[in-house]
Image (cartoon, rainbow, N blue to C red):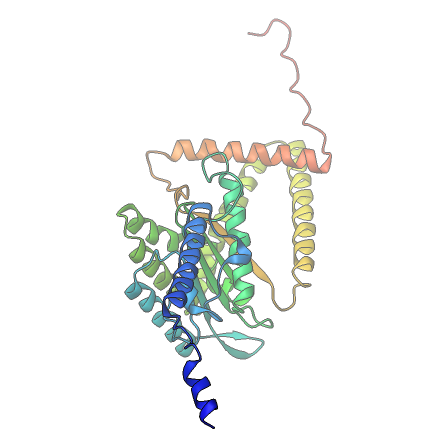
Length: 342
């Protein structure tokens, strides 16, 4: 027994390793910081963007939270602003509803913010359309990844903003789109632009979210339907006036062009509806809007003539489109002037 005690006393003690553990932790934090810096520089890939539903901490939300509806991995929003947005979204889900197939469904919304998207090239004047398409792809992917909206209803809304790219994309399900159509989204954007001009990024998104909540929480009315279809009805009226003033041949060409264009649009809409699931549940409606380039047209007494000429140019282009797509013959040339005429 004494020999065993001596051996135990002579055994070298295990050296403590707090310094080594600290260095490992510091290295991991440094790698995470470098990865975040690379993402801030190169932009976020869709597959790398975190989900606040499963990992709110990476979205800039409290790590103790079970889930969230706001994601800001680049920390562009203040903590207070993100908290207010989440409160608005949660209250809307609890207190508001939308009817689908005779049943009430809650309204599910989400806000995703990035400093920059990882897309080829830069979002300048020459690549605006590509950036808008990329914003739509981001919003659609996040809408699905976060599980917004019930598949049988389409009661979800995703607001996606890329600050450096100056892009926003509002993704809605079929039911939500009935309350938040394009003209309402245009109003949401106009509200946001006022704050963006003042470099108030937090307030721009907060007020835009509140504006979207106002529309998506409200039942559509007869007046809303009239406003939605006022412009198409006005265009049809102008077409009818032009056709009535023209001769019989021109009216026949106009009717043929309109029938052909209508048929083509119906076929395209049917094909799109089939690609979205046969027009049944889960239909997706999208509206891309550029933060910088979106312009609302206003007709005033001073520019009415310019607007009229623009409409005539539009009608001419539509006729050209009908001839290209439908194979319509061009109008006959005017008869030559009589001999000796002035």
